[in-house]
Length: 388
Ligand code: TTP
Ligand code: MG
Image (tube, rainbow, N blue to C red; front, side):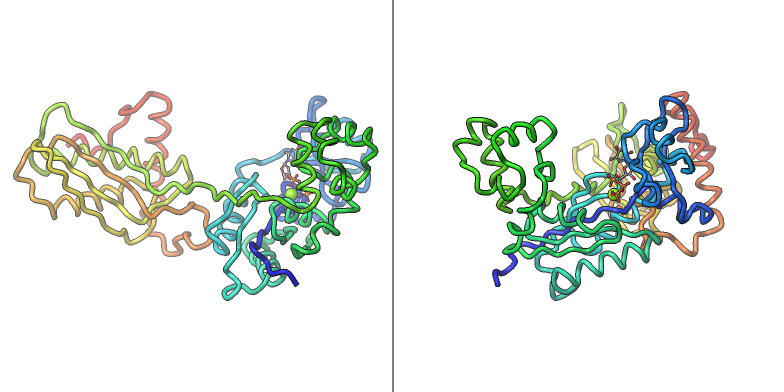
């Protein structure tokens, strides 16, 4: 048996939008659903598996879908909810590997090479991912595991819904051979037509086709398709670039002296940073203060907060605590505050079970500030403490 050089997982949620609706509204479970707007111009985002045997699915006009499946219940989409569930899914995937590349709300690649000691071999890691997603969201996912992105993706689709298929690298070519041309990445209706005119009818036939013939017909796409058909795909999983920190700093028009003066700028920076965190649905556990003296000396201090936050209050108090540890004899020309140690707000580990009762109120104030800034521009509203 050939060793696995890489273990690539592709995970794709089953009937994602429809499954979330059935999760949230038990009366919809087991029913044919069309997710989309009911009007004459409406388009189907997805159909529940109960509706699919009627020949309805994504991107079809709602009108046609309703004709084909008149008993289907039409449910308008709730994107914010799907995003929320998606964040939870991506957090779960992130607990299996730092190398997660999300392709859409419900789909991602993971490179889990080298995690065998932790999560077991290809089949075991697939099982664990499925169980962890079900546990965290109540939803089913289909998972494909192989040595390349392409084969992992085809494999996840092969046993949908709730599927798990492992294709060892040495079996990839045999696995792909009988599949239709359209399953090759980069083959749409046009390319399919060209391949057919060359007498090719399956992926297996592309795998053994003459490279020069395919190059003449398709240019560089030709050899690329042959490689894919042979199960060769060098593309790496490209992890989503994580945002490491969110900061705000101001270079002052006039140097300032002393804690009172610096406080004002600190609060403003905390508000800006908190607003940015909320817009990105992130919470921060770390806060860093940065000051530059009139003599261009850089002073920085950082600390860990008691709880992760996206509110200006805790960021400001953290900054203030740090400020008090610094010698403030010299005038200051720059004040900056940075939030770090970030995670997504909806993550399973981040929810603060023992939220302080004041937090809801804090959140209300923060939202009002966000809204005012959106409507009237930055600085539209000031906290009373800032005006003191
Ligand atoms: P898909 O993963 O393509 O479809 P799906 O999850 O609904 O079903 P499957 O079990 O076959 O994976 O897309 C994920 C979600 O993206 C889907 O639930 C709705 C949305 N979507 C659209 O809004 N329009 C589209 O054309 C497609 C393909 C998907
Ligand atoms: Mg899906």
